[in-house]
Every structure is written in C-alpha cells, then in structure tokens.
Image (cartoon, rainbow, N blue to C red; front, side, top):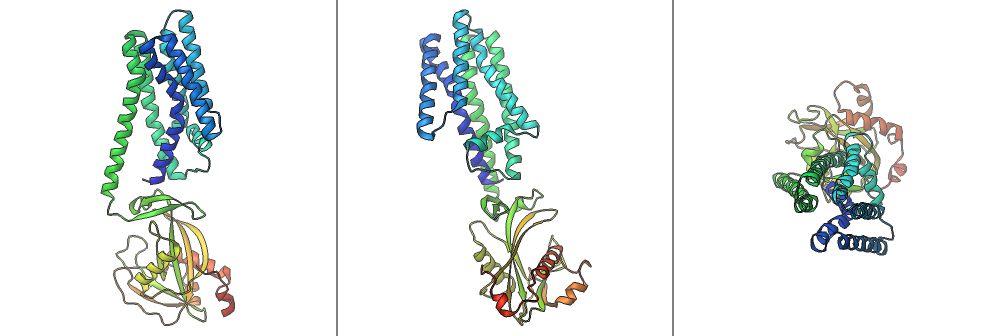
Length: 375
C-alpha cells in the first residue's frame, strides 16, 4: 500500500468523470420536462462545462465534446424516429466504448487509462508498484462498467422508462459509491492494522520522495524502491575498515561481516538525520563531518534499496555487542581482498568495497579525502 498511488487514482477519476455529467443532467431534466427540453438542458450543461474547463485550465476537454455530441445525435434520432430505444441505448454505447478501453488497459501491456492519466496530470509519474495497483483498480472498474452496461441494455428493451432512468443514472452512482466505499474501508482497516508499524519513504532512482509505505510492504518482494544510509569507518591511514558482525538472529545475511553502519531512512527524515541516528544507535558515536561516497541501487530477493553511502576517518573504535551487532573490529583491506566471495562478508558490503577501490579512496592523501562533499 503506497499512499501517493491513491492520490493519483483519485485525480485520474476526477479528470474523467466530468465527461459523463451531461448524460446524468439529461436524465434528470428528461424526467421533469421531457426529451426535447432534456436535450437542450444537457447541451447547455455540456457547453458550460467546456467554458469552465477552458477558463480554469486553458484546455478543451474532448471527452466532454464527444459525450455531449453523441448525446445530441442519438437523442435527435430518437425524436425523428419517434422511438426512444435509440436514446436508451446511448449510455450502453458510451459505456461499451469505455469498457473496451478498460479491457485493453486491464488485460494487456498497453495501459491506455494510465497514459490518459499522465496526459491529463502533467508532472505525475507512476512507479512499478503504483502501476500494478492502478491496473488492479482498472480491472475492477472494467467489471463494474460491464455489469452496468448489461443492466442498461436489459432495461432499454424490457423495463419501463422510469426503471431505465434509474439504472442508467442513479444505479451507476450507487455502484461506484459502494465500490469506492468498500475500498476506503479496506484501506482504513489496513492503516489501523499498520498504525504501529514503521513507515518508510518511497523514492525514484534520483532519491525524490514519491510517497511512503510500511516496512513490511517494502520487504515483501514487491521491490518498492526506498532509501537507506551506510557509513564506512576507515582508519586514518585508510588501510583498514571497521565492520560489524550481524547476529545469527538476523533474517537477512546472519553471521556475516557488514558495513559499520546501515539502516533505513524513516518517513519524514532527511539523509543527515537518518545517518546520525543510525550511527548513534549502532556504533554509539556522535557523527561529525561524514563524507559522501557513492549512491547506487541494490536489489536482493526481498527488497530494492537506493543506497547512500558515506565514510569517516576514525581510529580505535570499539563497540559493546548488543541485539543489533554481535561484534565489531577493523579489517585490513588486504584481508578483505583475500576473503571476498567466501561467505565471510555480506554481498552488499563486497559490492561497496569494490566500488570504494575503484574510487581510489584507499590511495587518497588527507587533503583529497577532505575534498569529498559533505553530507
């Protein structure tokens, strides 16, 4: 569950629903004043919508034009032929077209609805997890629209005009309110259940925050990209690195030597705050002047992280073993080289160690080390 995805879906629905309003206005006006007056009222309402959209957003909503034009065309045929069956079929035709669009979006690789959403909502993008959630919602909407379309067709041929008017208009709202009410209640229950759970920011590959998700969600194999911070503690001569031993009770990489400090960025935290908090919690020191080292994406079986790695120079670091760290000591870089790919270190640390060697950090002099950017 990602909070920002619900916002995108709501905005998309808000953009698409205005095109249906002329139909619902006609249904109400037709019930009160008859077909001719109802058509005029619906036409006037459609024109007013177009003017309002232009004044507010400086764009012509083609969806409103198409809906209003089809409404007038089918309504005109009904008047000329003195047979309202053509007009009664209009909602089913409109919904049939929409069902086709929804079907392509829900059951194929070409998500037309998502493309429409990105077109109408400039600057909004959908990550992989959001796309999956959006496609699930579109699939549900397809079944709702299909069921309503069949009901409209049945009512047009076999039920009274009053029953058709209710099914075409009122029932449509009732079905959607029931569906979104159910979705809201489900999300509400999930949030209550996760109320005490840690929430983490969801980011893009540049580190821009897109939303947030519970810790259990980002670790369930969904590979929602979230930020973490690492800190390497190097000896002042840059020939040794302090590593921590992960306890055997850890679910991920138990019993292996790992980066001195590593942890998630909490929702609402910046990198500096997260790095200082994790450093104090794991190795018990107040962080001063950390230097930015590398940023990269790390993917394991259960998660995908955007790693922000930093380093400091510090000698004689000692820690007291606890639930989070079983032990800690300095490793000579030659010792690390000799034991790579043996299972002694975590794969994540081995990757960063190779990156550090390529960066030349073990060969820099003091002035060059201090020239790295601060956090």
